[in-house]
Length: 120
Image (cartoon, rainbow, N blue to C red):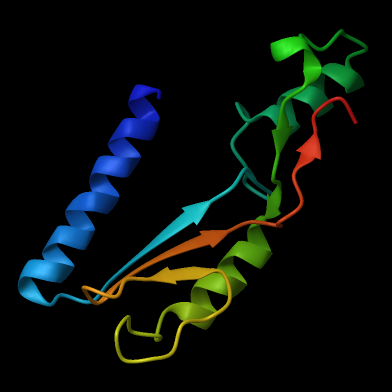
């Protein structure tokens, strides 16, 4: 596990603890490789497009077997808006979330649901 992944997991666990101990309704959203207007230029999609436009080779890692679940930024915002008023513990679970049974805590994965091989 990378340090980045560990800090994300620790943050989610802390959120669940607060929800459990103090009854604070808490929702965490997990985003997957977001792209679109104002996207980060250091992300793979933008790097690949830039290199292709410049006619330069793309460096391949992991023997080209990696996949990513790309999510358009407007789809991401739509999901957040749809769920922002759905308070954990007071509403039935919605598709794709993990409503905790021991605390008003919800973890929602927001992605396209179809990882694409980067070699495609």
